[in-house]
Image 1 (cartoon, rainbow, N blue to C red):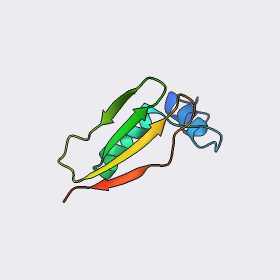
Image 2: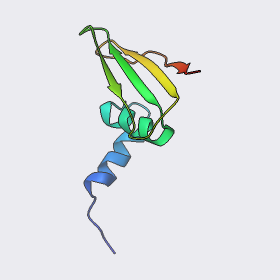
Image 3: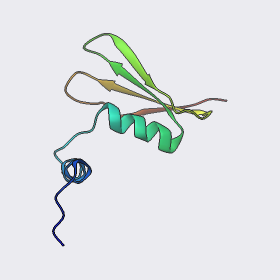
Image 4: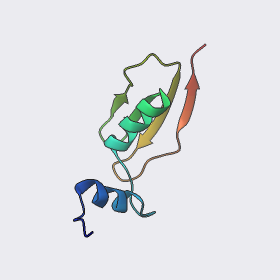
Length: 79
């Protein structure tokens, strides 16, 4: 059976490529799956965006973004 590719198939192929980088969608999904607040410090715009899952969390990550590349995540844990 020949099934035409769906947008999900195209996305899967694109994101599976090691040269592809995710963005807000992937960070949002990460936050939900791992129940972690993710703060993205947008250095080039001097602002921070927070991705928070709907559930209560006790973990947080901070990532910098310079407009082209993400920095290494820094993990924070509440006491």
